[in-house]
Length: 327
Image (cartoon, rainbow, N blue to C red; front, side, top):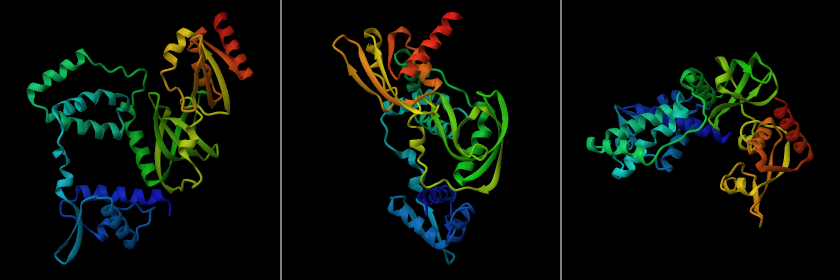
């Protein structure tokens, strides 16, 4: 049995228990499990025992001759946490950090939680909270807005949770065309200001990454799928500089003194290795996918960077610079 099945079942059990005032019988808990997962009462009993072993405060009661499970009220009323005034205000102030995730279930839940936190702040302290803007501000940088994609994100979230295939009409920017796809949604991934769907495409017969805002229409199905046991989601994206995948190459760059001063303090990719030179210059080595994304990133440093390896990347940078001059 895949471990994800157990986690998914327990998630659904906690969701139902969290809203059940009088607790639930074993039969009702079994019904809370999606039909594509194991729904045997013995399995659900093991899940309940595992949750209790993980310190979730489950209470077992006998009501009218029936055994019922429920969560202790103290666990539901978690806002009794002791937070200092500055901690409360810092959390309330962080609301704007969630702007790029607007339209997602995560943003909705976090925004709801922060609203409750804000309500706990005394009226007089809100003026101080507003003054925080005078010494601390948040620059989100370029990002996409998902306010108008809430339904798409909701459908994808449900399909991922239940592991059901979806049908979609998708606009491919590279080919400037809209096609119909049937995909098995594996995970939503937020990176560099954008939200992407990692899914197995039945048309391409391969795992692909789809930009959520380019999904023009989406229809859920009742067709279950199983993620291959050998598939590693983190390994799938590890070569991408941001989101584009391609052939992995070893890149060696040399930054001049002025550019090195601010390049060295950032992690541009997990594989990077940097070597400061006595001249103030900086050598950097990366293992990344050979894509237009990589080319654009190198060009963003202008004359402050030199490509040492590989030769084909050197030539690609020269060709692109020549085109820029021609324009």
